[in-house]
Image (cartoon, rainbow, N blue to C red):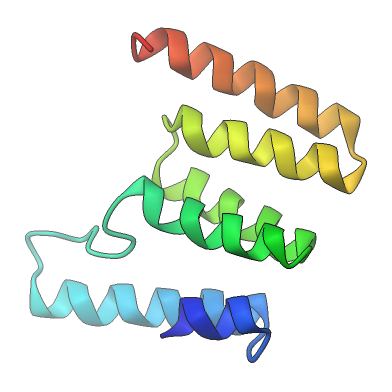
Length: 111
């Protein structure tokens, strides 16, 4: 629900991030053995970022992808998407940094 609201512009990224943390805490209380129930996988927030990118909400795109890097630090897909987002935003330095990271992670993962 919060993903849709962020994509639609109904809520801000900061509100989204706050609700994600609240949700994670609630899910951890329900199932303490599995503290990574949201996002369920690295693709979930990449899909949200792609939807935001189509709407040209680049600040939100970058924040969502950086959040995803926090959850999945070995995700070459997220690093590649971050590179693209920074490039579109006009930040060539950060675009290069995350493309390099994406390439390194891809090699480490055998892709």
